[in-house]
Image 1: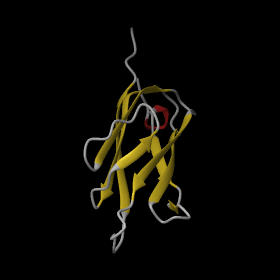
Image 2: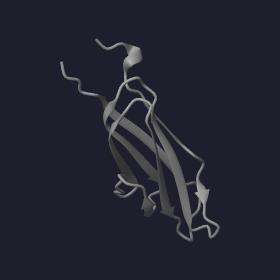
Image 3: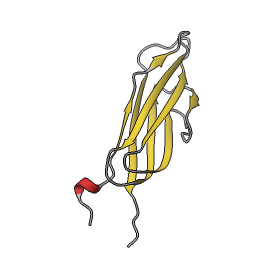
Image 4: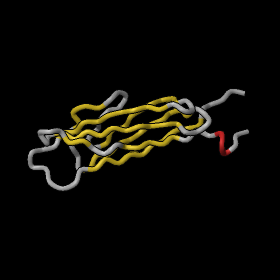
Length: 113
């Protein structure tokens, strides 16, 4: 029987964005952690950049699709921490704010009886 304290809990946090010296790229770094007591399966962090920018580099296993970037981490054990980085190109005529937002989904680890 599962108790509330024995569940997987996935959290993530972005570091402040870094702008290249040339002003043509923005970089985000994130840390995803399973702070729960159990393994999590099918862990997917989905990043979304607003406005839509070209992603010039991103860590594996992330796959850019327009301004949405899903990162399929699969199984994440209790206490495990994963870091990632994403670099997007800033157009020379860029104005306003560029943002990254994310959401994470996972399933409880399948156990056998």
